[in-house]
Image 1: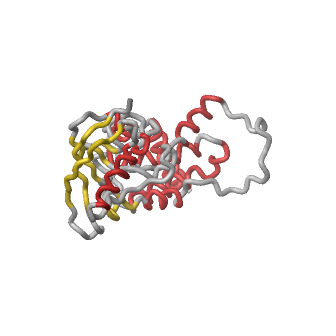
Image 2 (image 1 turned 30 degrees about the vertical axis):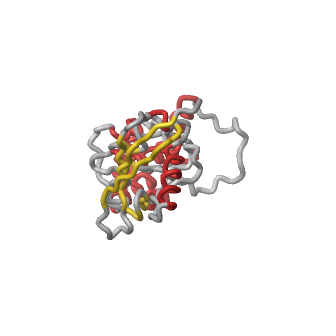
Image 3 (image 1 turned 90 degrees about the horizontal axis):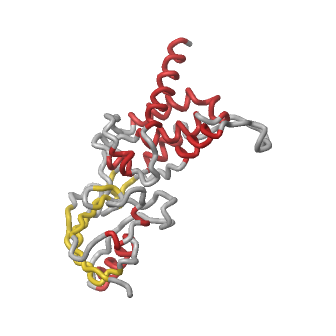
Length: 254
């Protein structure tokens, strides 16, 4: 038998980036505990529409935890209370009947609020454009075993590549730093032979662009690591710093 709960939602409502915005309270009744968090918001929006009110705007796409489009802060935690879980994969069974949930957008200088729970995360795209790719001409695809890569190196690279670019690390950081995101992209490519020719240029460009976009600096609080739905390690930040220092040193020498 499906269990249902009644909850109170305090949802951030903001029509535009220029609007002041504020929390509005609404009640969600008969919510199935089998629903995902976003399905619950869909039900709330249906009721708001029937009541002649504006539905809540929020981001989503795949609803499978792989695209990084969804994201909101639930009771002070990006993507909600469950570890290694995106908002779309968070289920209502993790909440109790009578709970009060405060839902607000990711907060960061670089993330401008578009409407309600939607923020402009295009600065993350600009960071990728600054160097999160391999542009050297590598010719045709080589045989899988023609470029031997030790398993531990391949594992580290693939762990970093798991980043989905949701921005939870930025929202969790007290300085709104994007270093976990940037370091994941830099580590992924710096560890693999295909990315080494542009490693120095990539590190310098992405770190400088991160500063230009208004992201803060890392102070090793580790909130980013704790809230990352893909459990990206801050070890990558140390690797990014090493790549950046190497880039700065060789630039100075040359």
